Image 1 (tube, helix red, strand yellow):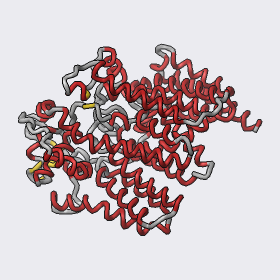
Image 2 (cartoon, helix red, strand yellow):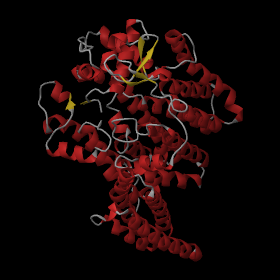
Image 3 (spheres, rainbow, N blue to C red):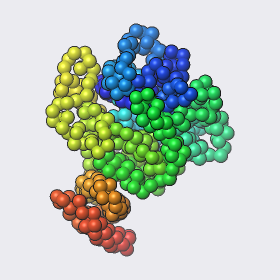
Length: 544
């Protein structure tokens, strides 16, 4: 992760402008406002339209980089944010992302490995590597966004509570968990979801020290807001700029709708987040294995942890589907769901234990897509993703690495060290797993899971795109039905193996050219498949 240098974008440069301004002694980013379009305009001054936590926690590192004389000194002078942002050297955002994203990713992987190992001994390392290579954690570990750091703080708070619940110890563990949960909110406000979930997980007897820690952790946010805006309760989000224009503040109020852009959850937004061309299940189908693994954990001694993880994943999906901009701009996937992914990794461990072939089958496309996106520059406009990444791989149009920066060339030579390390990670993770005999039922489940993913990845994005084009809902209904039938087919396959194959085989019709462009026919096929799956489920229940 540390070898990769991504091009700058508005989100990254907003955080960079803030951390640089903080070192200059001001919360305003007036001096660097032209480098980003993620700004707020308040009483004649510019501010980063971001939570301040990433910049605040990066400040000591950046001060050291500047003290060492290696910080990028020549900042762009262009008056336009597009020109100034593009003039900014990649090293500028890379230097701060090493601390705020890459190191944070390493910490969350270690925490995920430890937490998963406590629940499913022998499978923690495999789960952590799946989290690091097969989810959005990989590309965002190379980008100076707040998501990975927020996920790290939130999950490490859980790690401390888990340790305290299972091993006992001093109240300081609970206090520390609350502190990390509070800091996570300072880095990214929606981490309040995790903080509330962890309060329930901590239990009534630990609630007071946890709350004290959380309130202490939030103090930096109140202090920053008082310093910048004169009130601990005022946020830059309240005056976010919609259109920078030529003056820089032509239109203010990007998050005016609802509560900072959050209104009510929408079914279409949920379907887009899961099954569009950049949906979670389309790009990283191993997430489905994680959910399945958490369901398995619910039935065992890790029930409390599994319910917490499922709740966090569901809550983030609801929150994200309520936001006016669900994907958050030019991204490689639903980035607002990243803080829930370490909790999903607990399910990876159980999935690797109970269905290793199925988990591996879903992990392969996930890892390939995430590696492909990371090395082909992941930040792409909406509607553009896998196809563009494939074209860049075909043309060896990779992002820069340290090899490039050192004058060692571009193309395959530049990414060769990264690919070797990634291959080593996969190999060592596989070697770490316990050796268990492979079962025929797992092979059947793996084939069915891959088939379902292929159908969803092929048909669902077309159906949702068709809906947008003709302004109808038939495609949305078909996608929701497809996801429900797919989940039921997987359930039948887990219980009765080959009996689910008939329903999945019928869904294979959707892979034929042109079929997915006819939403009503698709809906008919999905309903017929659902009927077959329902009969199979009834027979399996009767047999049981």
